[in-house]
Image (cartoon, rainbow, N blue to C red; front, side, top):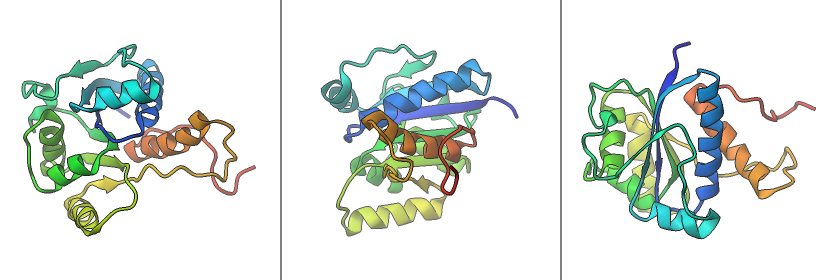
Length: 189
């Protein structure tokens, strides 16, 4: 399998722990040669939420961080060779802008590119409860080919920490990209 080129977008929804663990796992896949190009994009509020939840962001990852207004980023164009984009956590505002074709930031433009090029777009939505507009936006995106993956952790593996609990979501996100991570599977001992 060729190395996967991936974009990780982090928005201002609560759940920075998911994004942090996802980036850590992607670093391991990069070291194993399974990740090629990788880019990180933060929305305007994402770094603020990240700092509040887990401390100031420091790029200790072997990935390029792009400004959310940088439309010169390679994945802002359909001619790029990026395979998958994960928005984690994905705010309902970002999801709504993507669902309605508003490509006013690098995050929403890259998501638009993924949809139009029929590439994998995974949205780890983080909101509860949801109302009809949220549900309609999810339907629009699912019909357009996006994967809606709510950041809903599982408990059947008996996680012993917040990080272990969050990894149940991160493991699913990685699985949706096509990357294989050893993790607890239902029915296994």
